[in-house]
Amino acid sequence: MDIVNGKTGIAVDCFLECREAVNRKLESLRPFSAAPTLENAFELALFPGGKRLRPIMALACGELFGKRTDALLTVAVAVELLHTASLVFDDLPAMDNADARRGKPTLHKLYTPHLAVLCGHGMVSQALHLPTQSELSDSACRKIIAELSSCIGPHGMAAGQADDLDGTVIDNDYDALLVAEWKTGHLFRAAAYCGAVAGGAPDKAALLLAECGLHLGIAYQIADDLQDHETEDNPRRSVNVALLLGRDGAKQAFHKEISQARKLAGKAAADGAIMDFVEIMESYV
Image 1 (cartoon, rainbow, N blue to C red):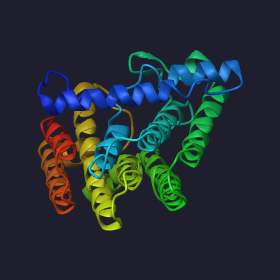
Image 2 (image 1 turned 135 degrees about the horizontal axis):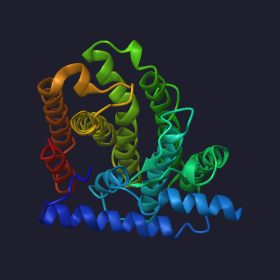
Image 3 (image 1 turned 30 degrees about the vertical axis):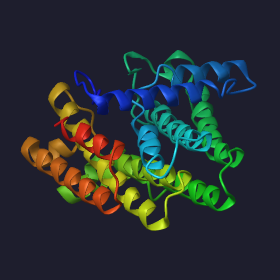
């Protein structure tokens, strides 16, 4: 889904400008690998990319506290590398066994599952390495790497994917929303927190923005589940908030998460791009 499709205005213009900045920074990382086949796999997985929501969130949070810097852009693309790696892993035959991603064959279909695994592994490694090569302070770098590594681990995205694949264990709305938090919320949280830290945010503001990002991530997953529920004739056997809560219940949960995000952004004295981000998200459902 494209949350800016058909929308116009200053907020959308800023959103699209941030996306282009992220793409340019990603392109500057070439070559991605010394191995030509792995280089091609990185290219196919990263370009053309999707909405770049998570790195845009990082930029928006960082720019609340100063100008856009190369260090901030570096953190934003590190977030996108983790997100892309998660998609490569999710598509694998042992996971979702997906044939297509964004209208094109998935990486393991174009090449092999083992190359897709190596590509995802390489992206995770690169994402955690990049902040150490930036002009971030040692303290900021430690905080960012700790957050990025934690969000993809066994108490974050890995946990969400485990329960998503074992959808039979999920039988209530609390569990469904928890899986949405693990699957998607944690990387949005990391994007907001790491962007804020890279921008020089005080600890309190960075933590408030992190929680704002968490609620936006859960909202985004609910919106995605609603779209899957409405467009797929035979949804795959996985956790879908709309299936468990019903369409109306999922919409109520979505707007509750958006409301929490707006409150937290307000407490962090966030304005401009962050509130624009919330408004764009809210208009989707």
